[in-house]
Structure formats: C-alpha cells, structure tokens
Length: 213
Ligand code: C5P
Image 1 (cartoon, helix red, strand yellow):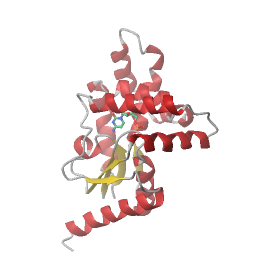
Image 2 (spheres, protein in one colour):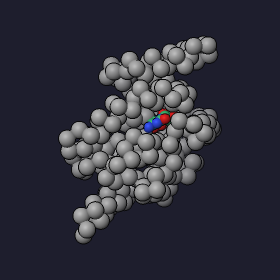
Image 3 (cartoon, protein in one colour):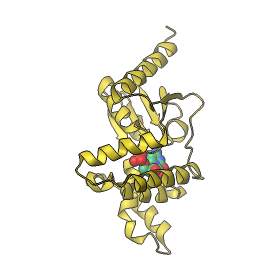
C-alpha cells in the first residue's frame, strides 16, 4: 500500500506520516529532507551566478551521507534553502525516480511532502492533505525546536513559515495542492494522538471502500 501525505510547512504531516508508517508497518520517506539536503549543500552559493547549476549537480549527487546531519537539516534556515532549490525544475526531476522507486518497493511505503499525491505517486492507494492554521503551525514548530534546547524567536519563525508557504505555492514546477482524490485533514484543533487516529481512520476507510466493503 502506498500512502501519500502532503501539506504545507509544519502542518504535522511528518509526524503523521511516521505514525502511519509505524501503524501499517511500512517504510517512511520524508521527501522534504531531500530538498533540505540539496539546499544545505549549496547554501554558501546562494548568490552565485551559477547557483542553479550547482543545485542541480547537488541533487544529482545526493546520497545517504548528505541526509545524516539532521540537526542542521531540520533547522528553519535549511527549510528556506530547501524552498529555494525546490523551484528549480531539474532539481525536482533529479529526485523524482528515487522517490518513485521508494514508493514502489514491495509492500509499499508512506511518503510525505508537497507533491506526493499529485506528481510523485498520483496512483497512491490513500492520499491525505494535512492543513493547520499558520499560527498553530508556528507554535508547534517552536515547541519542537525548544525541545531540542534552541531559543526560538516566534516572530521570525512565523515569517519564515509564511515565506516558505508563499514560495512553495508559487512554485511553477510544484503540484503543491490537494489532489482531487486526497482527503483533507485539518489538524488545527487536534492533538497528535487524535490527528493520527483520524489519519488511520481515513486510510482504513479508503481501503475498505476499494475492497467494496
Ligand atoms: O517538508 P519540509 O518542510 O521539510 O520541506 C522543506 C521544503 O522542501 C519545502 O518548503 C518545499 O520547498 C520543499 N519540498 C518540495 N517538495 C516536496 C517536499 C519538500 O518542494 N515533496
């Protein structure tokens, strides 16, 4: 079974995707991490005239070693760099097959990102689109960072999330919208346990519907 989990920055899609993967015993791929790794690899060339070419080369050379530094890759800055390389068509193309192969491994997988249900796996068995109010998303991300001992400037974080949302929504190579056959899950008023229960109910319901139950 392939499960696609899409949604905007800090919507909780990663936590829900991990929970779904655990529940159904499936491997999980956080596709945002791929874009973060590419953005991080070229962060010092952001103003260089050949920035695009460098980002494309980094995407083509991406391997597991580039995904190891989770502390750096999950930072707010890495998210901004990710959204800058994510608007380069050949960067997206370079990582498409890897994501598709991951999804189509025997037994299936859970993938979370922005374009899983629309571009990477339009054929996914279950699709969820996770939403939450942007202030709630900021607060959740702030608490995650504080748990790691970081000092958080909530005003700056809110603007980082807004900047990323705006760039992502305008991405000409994106597909960052809810697929017609995706189920919308608004987690604004839900805790993580309740959101996961709701997500599992959606996936089970989709499977039961397909089986004609
Ligand atoms: O999901 P996450 O917040 O880690 O994603 C970081 C950035 O990577 C997003 O803001 C987006 O620009 C990009 N991204 C993407 N396509 C995906 C996943 C992430 O363009 N499937």
